[in-house]
View 1 (cartoon, rainbow, N blue to C red):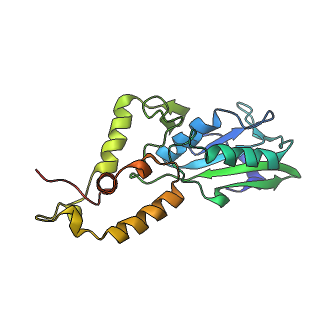
View 2: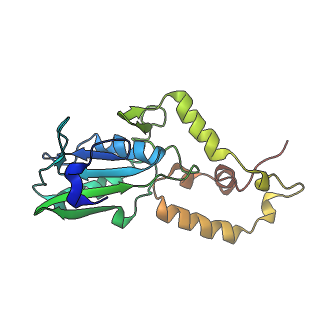
View 3: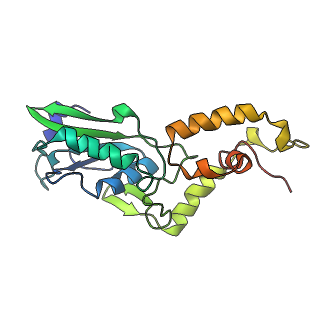
Length: 206
């Protein structure tokens, strides 16, 4: 995304702008969830959407404090269901002498979807369409959960294998790495057996 040409862009299914003159808007988190659950996207704070007109760079009164506020909320256990944003995904940029905050939200893997808010998977899971952010219906959430648990042909259940055949130290190291990247994810609180099932590495036969 070329920030110097912001006035040539329009909001859409991969771009959201907010003037954010009063601080981090609450609605930003719905957009983070929506982008993560669909195709990813970019949020720019300090830019005004003038319907039918070019985007207007307004800048932010205190971009550094707002960036700190964003990260404090993003890393809170009560905000996002998973920690998937990296340090360089949210940053301050200068556009025409005005500071804006650019947040690049990646599309998360199916194993981590759905990304939801406020620990409310059925009420606060969002998706992005060309018209904006939309709260997911129960059926859409269930579909994401099924996708997260689905396995391919080359990961079919191996017969006569037990959980104690799996090296526990390898599982421990993987879970540490997973937790470091996804500190608030609900899978961190489950048993090793449940965790391996959730990520598709293990499954029970009949």
